[in-house]
Length: 150
Image (cartoon, rainbow, N blue to C red; front, side, top):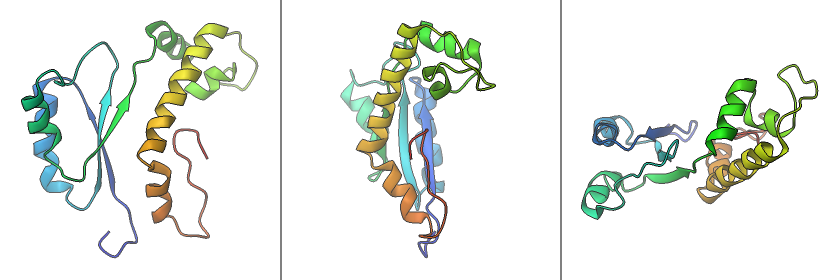
């Protein structure tokens, strides 16, 4: 890593509990040379202490170079249908079964998932995730994909 031959990235998926936030401090000694991403994953209608700025600042500012990524909440019914289909989100949006055959998923729920994926990819674009990953790839190496994007 120090020679620039490897980019080490840590995606710390956070919950909204104090215990989850304490993990930030626990990992700090091990991630000094890493690209460190604090990922707020809104799996439900929770908050991450934004309402208490002192608590929020004491945890989220422990790393001067930490980058926050916010994964928005996906509609519960849409998420449930993707789970039941047992396919990746993009496959669900494409209305395909795991086998690749045509499916008959709800047009509306596929739209929710498509919109949600667009927001997730927007977050990746905002933090320039493709550029971070691509800088470590050799010019002759394979093209890097992040979450279904090329």
